[in-house]
Length: 432
Image 1 (cartoon, rainbow, N blue to C red):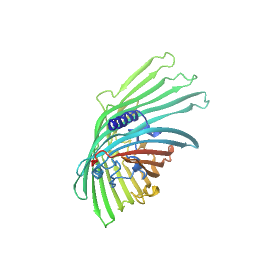
Image 2: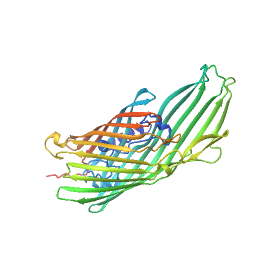
Image 3: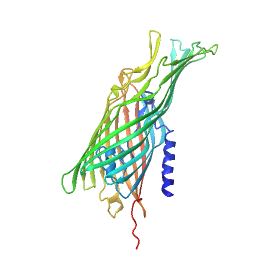
Image 4: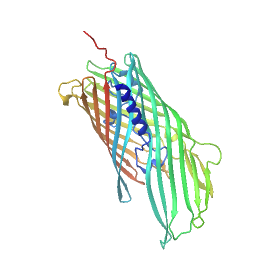
């Protein structure tokens, strides 16, 4: 009964998380939104590092091949949340904003010899922003207009994955996922009392229900009695995910309050897309006490089309454009240090983690590169022991800078908290 209640709690928290937005960035008004962290609590201490990592007591969905390393006696639950403070800077002006989010809930267990299974719910993209800009018309500055931008939503994914080690040192895995969610965005152009111009409102929406497929491999080579090296690779299948993105344009006469409404696209349906993704990673493991790794990820956003509202020679078109995104490259370096994993002293069993990353822009805004991302993290894995379990509290602090010379700069300070329940479900008790 206890296990059922735990699983039900994880599921209910995940469903609650699916209704939340993990961002307040104006950059989430472009594309599918801001890209969510695709990592669990222990990865985040190393800034998301994990393609080459094989953990027996943590859920590493960064590479599904790692599931084959899960301990045979345990059932893992991992839930995570974050809180962040964001500082926005543009044109000499600064503004702070706060947000918090219940992010993911995942589980994993050993299904058979050298076969691990994992399942869970986590974010894919986030949309959340609200801001306004006012401009004066003419030299007298008696008339003005205000553009108000709002957006909410995001895409979530539920997955079921399997990892198998067919030969010693070789592991393969696959995650099959279901994507759902979407976004609601709006731009309202209104004028002050001195102007007679019409109010123009644009409402953008999409609703996604599709699939996601990711595969991974890992190769482990023994270098010495205490040292080994693991090479990992991942592939994410890029395809159309539907969504039927639409645009509703409403022009309201200020004097008569008569509204003229046009819905786009005028003919047919549009489809959103996700990119093909390639990843590679390496991890050096010394005696299970020091693990040093590096990851590289390449996302082909440049081949992805997104909907765009364009007016050319007084002719309005809302259609798919391939000129709004560009390929994204991300490099991550990090380490995990645990002096003595099963030591008697508490500080010897703590995991000390750190990582740094750099990612190129994937957005094109008015023909210019969007923000590049630089980030760093510092984290701890704190063991929590009781009679039937050895759980871990993963805590990390993360700094993310989205830097763009022509547009807004964001500095995000984030606290990540993840709790991994490591229950001994499959132990056979001996009765004397």
